[in-house]
Length: 172
Image 1 (cartoon, rainbow, N blue to C red):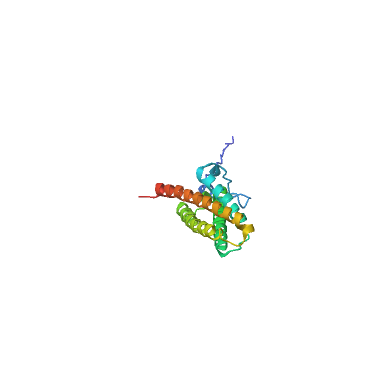
Image 2: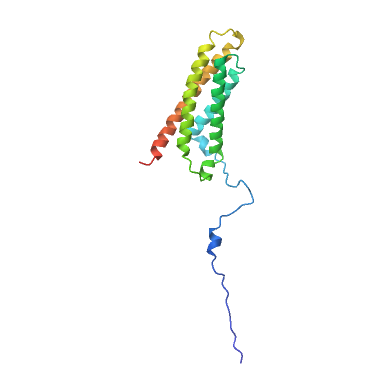
């Protein structure tokens, strides 16, 4: 009589396999489109800043006076900075990158600087154009200054909301 031996092979759990990050064939799979942010008050303010910045740049061009050069510099740099923040929120970069950056404070400083620069820029723009000899471009440049006021208000409101968020998230 022969004895029969049965061997059951069970795969041992591999703890190292569970700790491996899931890699994807897509190189930018960490990017998630976040359109929900632009339905919030800060997101709507950022869109308003972008639209008002485009109007400021379009109406103040070409820069015929030195004050308009400064106004366009402020409008362009603020527009680029805001566009970068729009992409940071749109692509979810804040959540995807694990960098030691205080995102709210960085955005607060950027928006605060844009607010102050726009206040100075619209004052300069509106003070040089009423007495200008360029009659044909006067109306558009005064309108650019008025849109600069509106954009300074938008940046100021954005700075205020960021300050409230910063104070609420700051450790005591």
